[in-house]
Amino acid sequence: MIRSETLFGKRDANTPNSPLNTTSGIVPTGTGLNKSVPPVSTMSGTAASADQPTTNEGGSKLIVGPNIKLKGVEITDCDTLCVEGRVEATIDSRVIQISEGGAFKGSAEIDIAEIRGEFDGELTVRQKLVIYSTGKVTGKVRYGKVVIEEGGQLSGEVQVGTAAAAKGLTVAKVG
Figure (cartoon, rainbow, N blue to C red):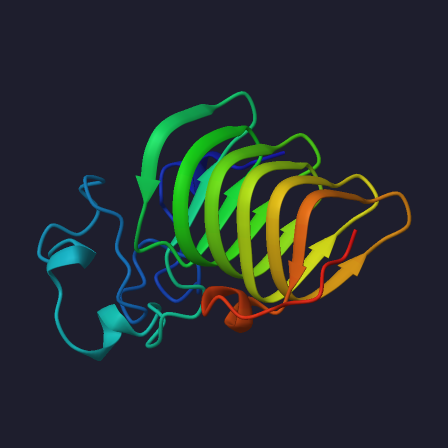
């Protein structure tokens, strides 16, 4: 059973998770517990930035959730696109991950593609294309390396060697 003291912030100030513990630099705003301490967003110094990553570990990430339809857009400055719903777009990104229920239709230039759902369109994968057992890729596909799990589908105009394909040189066709 939850004690009422924990619900209303009446904890010992030395408790690590206590809202009264200001040594971590995190104080809930709007609680009225400590009005002399400004909100975290306006604090300066190492205490406020200690919990924030110093490097952009995951980079910018766009997640299109299940039952969401994103249509007719150009996605830019996105490091990772996670598709759980439906997307009709053009993208130049580092990573695309299409989940089992997800679908992407359009044009994509990607470093690494992980396909568990459906991709239909023009796909250029500069490094590695991974098609899982539930994945289906159709259209014009160029890739550096490919891994297709048993049950995965790849069809259409398929070319290996993205650098050579971009320069118009002869490339081996896989089909």
